[in-house]
Every structure is written in structure tokens, then in C-alpha cells.
Amino acid sequence: MAIATPLAPPPTTTPALRRHPSGLGLLLIWTLAVISLLYFLPLAIAFSRGHKDTGAIFVVDLFLGWTLVGWVVALVWACKSMKV
Image 1 (cartoon, rainbow, N blue to C red):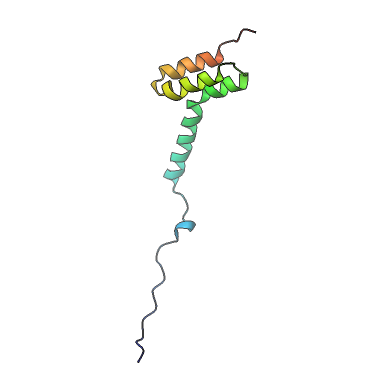
Image 2: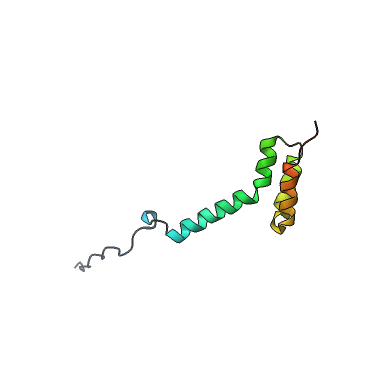
């Protein structure tokens, strides 16, 4: 003798793949992107100018950029004219 089982109710939530990111999540992503671009601005300047010390500027910016003093040093170094 078979026992009748009721059908499962339809899911009340949307599947995870169909969810749209919230406005707060998009704001967080954009904020992190802008901060990252500004953080590595000295590197971008040094690279675009073909600076001979681009690697050293990257290291200073990466490890000391958070202190703001290190970031300013890297920025000034990247903008400094190069003797030919």
C-alpha cells in the first residue's frame, strides 16, 4: 500500500543566481575600486612616464602608502624629473 505525500510548496525565495546586488554592495565595490586606483596612482604615473625606478616606487607605495607619508614620497618620486 503506497502512502500519498503532499507536493512540496514552491520556494518562497529567489534563487541565489537571480538576485540583484543591492545598492549598498555596488557602492562598496565602487568605493574599493576608487580607493585602490588612488592608492596606486604613484605607480601608474611612474609607469606611464617610463621611470627607471618604477619597481622601487611600487614597493614604497605598496608597503608604506598606507601611512600617507609613504604615499606622498612615492608620488613625488614618480613625478620627479629624470636626468637623461
